Length: 378
Image 1 (cartoon, rainbow, N blue to C red):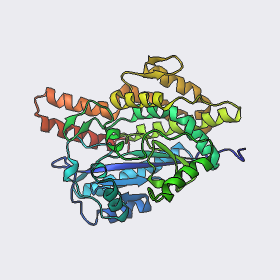
Image 2 (image 1 turned 180 degrees about the vertical axis):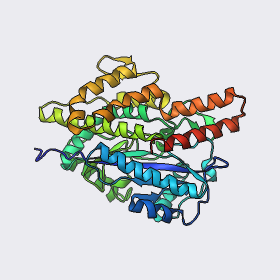
Image 3 (image 1 turned 120 degrees about the vertical axis):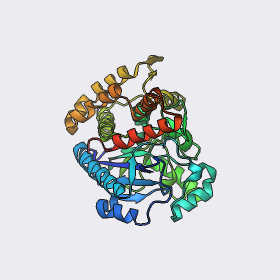
Image 4 (image 1 turned 30 degrees about the vertical axis):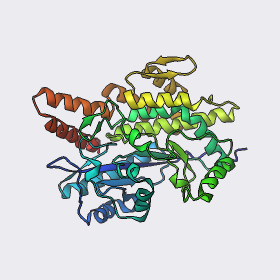
């Protein structure tokens, strides 16, 4: 029994890479004062990450998509402003086109040292960035129920967010290489399906009692009940390079969540599909983004992504209106027209190569595109 409707408040976290504007490589040893300077502009909404070349920001709790956009714009602008004072560029992408993880230095923090001690090489190579979106849902059991239903849509969100086609100077052939790195850790991938919050807590309790994890923050599924907030946290997406894309996917995500809630209170629900099927679409999203379509499980056939997106937008039209984000969710279609960050990176390399540049210069051109696109719309 749900006591009241969910809040559907929002919080967005983004991780950025810091690059030297001259070499376009990741900055290995940023100035010691850099985090303090970021904090002076962004307050406690910024923190360092596993590697010293990474920085993370998180919005405040936002009542709607427009508040999330405003806070993201302020935070991105502040990070870029401070970075530029030091000759650095900011890249909102899930991998760097050519810098190597073996050349990076780790942030000296207990939880990072504990992570690398436990996970060894699987953690040391985490030169990747992600985007996490929290949706406020106060009822524990409702969070679990909606998470289980939402799993179907996770590959769709990934397909629209891809920003990691390159790894250590190589075109990987994947639009989202990030997840191949992250999936080397335990407790990643699609979320488990539970019947209640109590069942979820029992399973987490088994791992904590056995000493495998300290708490549920060490569960890194594509979507999880947040351990710190009364939210469902979606973690599958690559970082969107353009702010408009971040906002569009945030709008799409919260509208899908509200649609699933709306079905529930009408005694309906989204069909639960086997993980092996959803995992197939997850892989297709990693490999192709939206280029080659996803499987429509009911039809048992590959369907063009645009058709699937149109269907989702029709299903959530009522929710977009209720949440006041009609314009933002409609701009999801712009991603198909313009391309994801991965598409734009590959195009930048192609154009530089066509003009006669060597491989290294082409990869630097990709970084320039990323720096420019990260600042667009601010």
